[in-house]
Image (cartoon, rainbow, N blue to C red):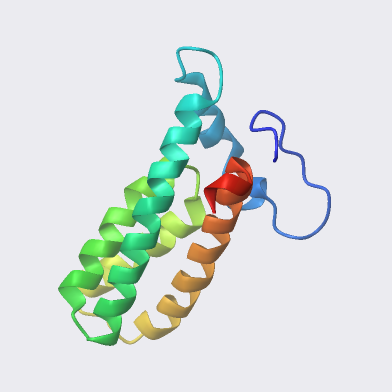
Length: 135
C-alpha cells in the first residue's frame, strides 16, 4: 500500500501524481480534522463507487445514443473528478457534456474511447492510493 502522504514517481509509467493532482489530494488531506488520511480515504472510496456507476451509465447511454443521459453522466463525473484531482478526466467529461449540449456529436465517439481509457487510469490510481482492499 502506498503512503497517502508521500507519493513519489518511480518510473515513466503513469503514477498517481500524473493522474491525480497532488495539490487537490493535499487539499482533501488538509480537511481531515484528525490530521490523518481518513477523510481522503472516504472521499476516494465514495468517488470510486460513483466513477464505476457513472462510467457504466455514460457507456450505456452512448451505445444507445441517449445523448441527454450521456451528458448527465459526464456532468456528474466532471465535478467529482475535479475534486479528487482527476483534472484531465474532469476536462474530458466537460468536453463531452458541452458537445452534447451544442449538438456537436461528431467527436463524441473518439472522446468516449479516451473517456473509458482515462476512467480506467483514474480508477487504478485511486485504487493504488487506497491499497489492495479497495479494488
